[in-house]
Length: 278
Image 1 (spheres, rainbow, N blue to C red):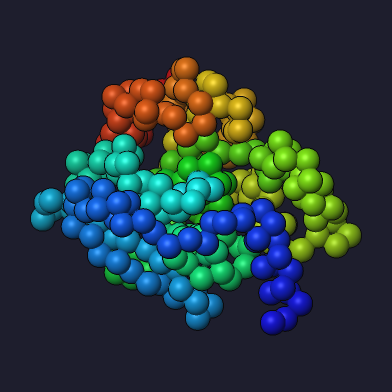
Image 2 (cartoon, rainbow, N blue to C red):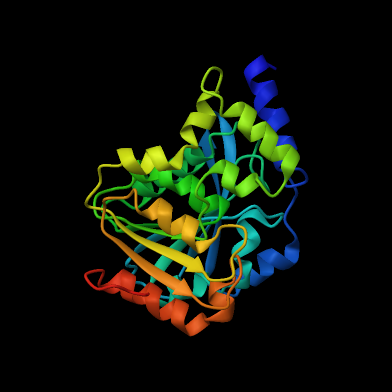
């Protein structure tokens, strides 16, 4: 093992302990109730990114949604509750779920998580060319979606839900990990994966006016506060829309306001010329 891979593996285990776990059968069974399932093994750096493709019960499919999961032992099976998936399946979109490297069933590769998303994007573009593509990230997944947006085809749509403003902003609640982040951010020796995680810079550099973004915030979110997410959105020059959900904590949007969440999402998919929220 090289020094670089040793450092990546050590940091991966430090920040994401216990997340390399096999799936539970119950999670798989829950997903099967929402559509036809195909298990995928997508290659990145000759290693496996485990994914699942769900097809809606319709022959006329409008496009593909790629979901990027939050930090969770469930990884891609985080979405097995169906609250988010069913909105897309009902609208005739197929859905792709995947495990970030080192999570769930995926091999551990490195800390360039946005490259996992890019790999899945390229797979979907090859498998379903000339079809609309939607990228929907939650929390950790949303954060890593930002840099991957440059890999999206023209006129794609991006949903960023409960997104952190920066790596430090997320980990500052855990002092020891926050200290490691501060040390790694020092420009004199900052590794390239840390520079890749500067999402403010990534949005400043993103020159994609063809893309359309929906930012979803929750009023009682203490992990990724709404004001920090809106500040991050200010750096984006592409068309952007907002949905703010009251009385909801981190990742609770569709739980607290299922109908409001679904309606806003559908309006964003159908017509993004109008604001979809407040």
